Image 1 (tube, rainbow, N blue to C red):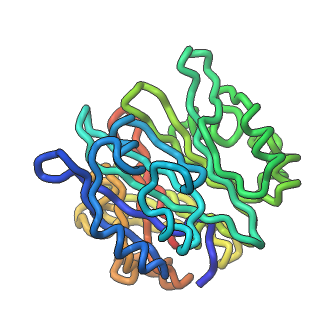
Image 2: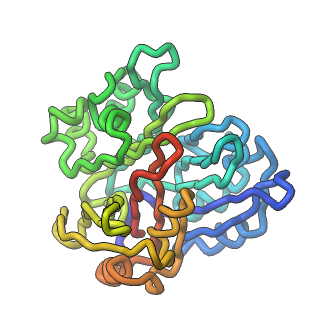
Length: 314
């Protein structure tokens, strides 16, 4: 199994009476002890990482677990998880789910997890809320000092477009990534930015950055609606294992609401499949081609509607 910066994911959903968050599925790879502990947990409002995202009604990034409100520190450390981000999904004022994505810095490969937010004063700028940068200390310093105009840099592009943005060569993208020199020095080459709205009227962008020898995920895809045909169309894919970017299109019919990507689109909530071999069509083939053990489908929302699904193969 090829090591990736994104290590695992889990989904938490409200209980029937809405008083707790209960385990709603996950993909943990070889982290079996962490998985077993997680399946037995529940969280109240404000408890643990999922509960904190529920209470604050916005994405929450934990740059480290030790000394924090995280409840599974020892198991996370044993699994190689070093940081995480919790992403709540709301419909109107009602919480639907909290997606938690775990990442891990490797000794030989660099990676960074960032959370950006638009300026509350309405000045049209994004600033860093928090980040986990591993050994990339100089990159961290400049990132915490950076302010991005709407449309500038990787987070600013995702903010402006309302869609995920992927860059396969950060140091060679000065027009699209403003920290090129620092990224090159830190060994960071790939970048994925995904926009998220909060219930506080703010716009957040989560960015995953990693070196070529530590892929963000085994494969990354973007799916959008082909409205006249009532189907989803794969418009982009990238895999370190298959030579990089691919523009080979594929489609999934919406008339048969099966498969993680279609479910994420129709439900408007993330879907995790820890057995991607049972997907159908192009996702099954993609998973098999890289030996993926999980598929994470993340809907990107704009004004209450899904505009895109980002598929991460682990």
